[in-house]
Image (cartoon, rainbow, N blue to C red; front, side, top):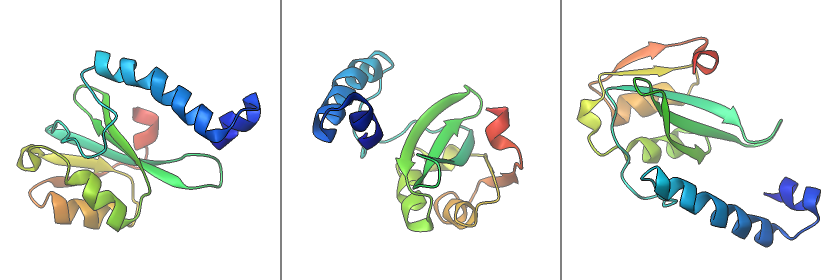
Length: 130
């Protein structure tokens, strides 16, 4: 948001409020809400990956339904203590049969803790296949 605010020479709160005003109807149209604690639909095949919010800055984690090729959720952080709460939001964690992920040191233990029945599939090129 700070980069957008600087680019358009507006305050960060104004940029955030504009983003919220734009994203809320788009999310509702897809049956989603901008609420971090809402349970997430649980896919049979889950993808988890990381991405940089900005180059050389804080990373974020994304969960994907690999069958539907849809993003379920994204959240800031990729450390174990940030990924476990994200995975715990899956509404039916026992449904997950397999999780495709890169070799991030925090993803494997987070999945083993949150989804012990799921088979872990290490995908060296996951981000390019989505």
